[in-house]
Structures are given as structure tokens and as C-alpha cells.
Image 1 (cartoon, rainbow, N blue to C red):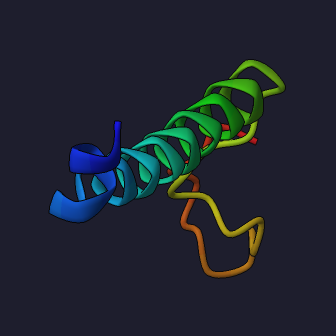
Image 2 (spheres, helix red, strand yellow; image 1 turned 180 degrees about the horizontal axis):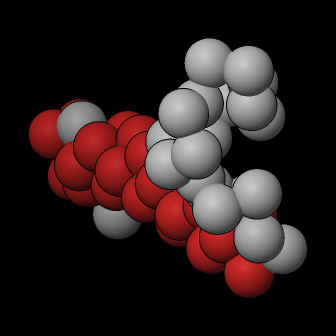
Amino acid sequence: MAELFANGLVGSILVGAVLLGAVVLSIRSMIISKKKGKSLQCGCDCEHCGGHCNR
């Protein structure tokens, strides 16, 4: 186990896990927003939209 700490492998795994968690949470947030009818491209500024967002 001491070899893993000395090589920095544990730190790399922890950083990778944190980054993976952030990506998963970000994608989950986008999916939930999409299911609620919010679009990633829509800024909800319908004056300037030109009717592209179907609202």
C-alpha cells in the first residue's frame, strides 16, 4: 500500500474520481433541465428569439 502512495497513484485515482463525479452531475443536471422543458440553447429571451424555441 505504501508503494501506491509513493507513486502518486492514489492521488491520481482520487482526482479522477472527483472529475468523473463532476461530469456525471453536470450531465444529470442537463438531462433534468431538458425533461423540464428547458433547452440548453434557449436563454428565455423571447424578444430576440425569432420563434426558434417553440415557446
